[in-house]
Image (cartoon, rainbow, N blue to C red; front, side, top):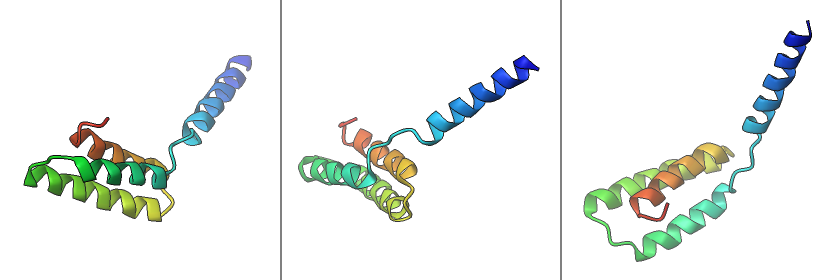
Length: 83
């Protein structure tokens, strides 16, 4: 019985810390991305990828899905060599 209780508490704690983990507000990530794009030297193909990732991130940000928006913005920053 105690093992079940301990396991339940541990899983609940893990869920709550991962589900509500602090993320950078997507608006901040977007602003950082836009600044990075201004000075980036990209091929046309990479520029198109960054634009696509930015657009997807904006869509998720607008839907108040900061976690997924940040994933798209981070991927775009990696293409820019900033992450």
